[in-house]
Structure formats: C-alpha cells, structure tokens
Image (cartoon, rainbow, N blue to C red):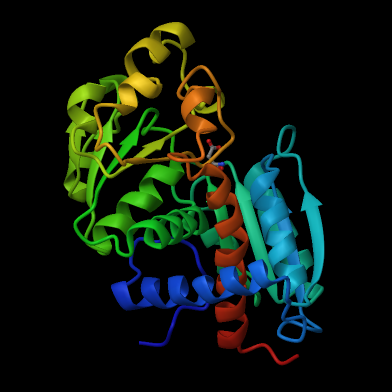
Length: 310
Ligand code: ASP
C-alpha cells in the first residue's frame, strides 16, 4: 500500500509510521534548538493555513514550521458563522486547487471537513483539528514530549482527564498512545465521557484519586464550553472541585508524574497555575516547542510524498 498523501487522523497509522514521524521530529527539535534552519527543503512550495475556527498556537506553529523549511506561507481565516458550511468548503477547495497550493493545513469545527477537502484538492491536506474528531499533530507532539522524558511510551500509564467528550485531542491521543503500547485511562464525569469509548481499549474512571493512581503522565483537557450542550457541567467551581488538577490532586499520581495540557488552559478550572507553571512537573511549554518540530516533520514527510511537480 502506498504511503498516505495526507495526514487526516492518527487512527489507522501503524507503529512504524508514527515512530518515523517522531524520529524525524526529534531531529527537527534538535535543529531548532541549535538555531539552524533548513530553508531549502520546501523552497518554492506553498503552504496555506486554512482556519475555519480560531487558533493561535496551532496556526502560528504551522506557520513557523513552514517558514523554517523555506515554504511560502499564507494564512487564511474564514468565518463560518453566516454561510452554508458545506458549500463554502467545496468552493474554497476549488479556489485553492486552482492556485496550485502544495500543502493545505485545515482546521474546521465540523468533523470530517479536512477529509472532504482532501478528496477535492491536489495538495497534501493536514488536519489541524476537526470538530470533536481528531487533532493528529497534537497527539504527535504530545508523544514526542513524553518520549523525550521517559524514553518510550510502552507500558506508561497516561491519565487523560476532564472534558473527553468534546476533545479531538483526547481521541488522537487514545489512538496514538495505545498504538505505541501505553496504557490509557480516561478520567472525567459521566456526562463528559462519550458512549462506547471503552471500545478503544482504554479504562474509564470517574474519580481523580482512582484515575490518577500510579499514573506516569497526567494530561488535562480544556472544558470546551463552546461545543457543549447546556447542563453537562453544573458550574466551573464544582468541576474544579471534582476534576481540577492542583498540587494535592497531582499527589495521587506517581511521585514523578508529569503534567500536560494542549492549551489554551482555563486556569483555576481544569488546572491550577501552581502545577501548570511548575518547571519540575509541567511539560506544557515543551509541548508548544515540540509542536513546531512535529509540524516540520509532517510537512517534510508529506512534501516528499507529493506527486505534484514543483
Ligand atoms: N487546542 C486544542 C484543540 O484545538 C485543545 C482545545 O482547544 O482545548 O483541540
């Protein structure tokens, strides 16, 4: 089977495919720290960041990654508020196709939108987060960050906590972590736990002390109120009381457990500043750094596979 032309999801990637991306990203992480760039690699190639949903860190990260590899980068933010989304998407695809773009990074509030675009354009499409479906580069950067600290993912206990139901980050992480041999626990209230999620080979917990017991990694998720039907969570205060991470709650995990969060954080809701900003325990800043390296690896890999002649 030929290597995939797009990166639409983690689901379906094999361990060697994931490991190859992580190894390349590791090399880019070292290059970035050395202050050097690789501006010849994507010279003459065009990357379009097509964001139908707000983003600061992911868009900037793809922009930096593209520029560090020498691509011409264009940012497009498209409002979906007043238009028929399906029609706009196809129209946009046809327009971009006519512009001969090479790499198309897409974020959309509807699950499946990047896959739809991928069927309509010649460019390599990268899913930068679609609805509640997947956010593949986030899972890759999380895995790279963990691997740098623990050497491997195999056998680690990773507790993913909070608003699982609305989180594409959780879904991509479940696929990636279980594929590479980690044990994944989901911890959150029943109202924020998707039905049938245990079929993905994870353990479900509704209480932080039990879910965090012996965890190596505690990954907190944002409470995504913008995607939530009313009434799923009583109040931010109550959520914090039962599911927020502070130094005391972190004490239920392994003594050297590390803390992650994909951002943006609701400080004082799902995570307290005391743990988020603790350099001995928090990997949050490093996740952002690894994001650029992972996106460079993805752009590099897909550009090499591209059949478009430049
Ligand atoms: N930035 C992540 C995403 O786009 C997580 C979040 O928004 O809470 O899915």
